[in-house]
Amino acid sequence: MGNPLGEFLRARRHLTTFEQVGLPHIDGRRRTPGLRRDEVAVLAGLSIDYYTRLEQGRERHPSAQVLNALAQVLQLGPEATEYLHELAHPRACKRGPIDQVNPTVAQLGKDLDHLVVFTTDRRMDVPYRNPLAAALHGWLKHSDNMIRMHFLDPAAREFYLDWEREARFRVAHVRAATGVAYGDRQLLALVDELSAGSEDFRRIWDRHDVRVRTNESIRYRHPEAGEMTLLYETFAINSTPGQNLVIGRAQPGSPSEHALCRLRALAAARG
Image (tube, rainbow, N blue to C red; front, side):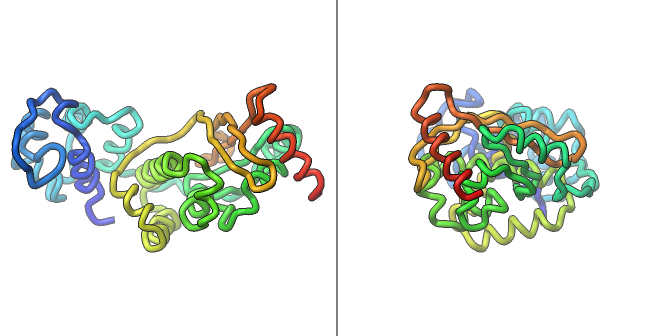
């Protein structure tokens, strides 16, 4: 992984504007976007030399006070701040059977056959999906992994009406997972695979955005059921750490609900 702490600090520094930190705009061209190292150092109450060593990987054990000061300067949210602490003080990856499906969760998916139900893990693999979820996106290539499907199947660009927005969410999720699951070789191999296969993935990955989605709406254009907007909630599965339960529904009485009904009929016809 090289110097993940320094890479993260540098990327977020480049994305932080003068206006965000209350500095006056300086006329003239600058060699780097966003803030300079010396500006971040002064705003965080650090010496320029110390901050430079952090970015260069020559200082790898900053205190929590230093990290919190940097998080404030770089306008990091709670998830990105937690990720920053993980990079500075990584913990061994807790390996577990995240590819296995709890039978209770699978039964829940069957019981909620009128809803889109599937599970994901930190690598965005899909260990389980009910028939309605399979009808929704199971026809796409690489559908056993949501982020691989998103970037490596060209059809996904037509399927997701807000492809760029969804892409950023998914990359931010995987970025967060690389901090929590430090040392997960399969996760790192996935990042390498996507980096080699997708210029868009590389572009978004280099932003170092960090966000874990819990609830959101997603707009689709399904080739058979038509356009629909589904509202999602994501829940951690405590019995299988690292795995989440995702449930999607349509707004009652909306055109999306009618489209979901068509999708349900397709799922039933396919058995």
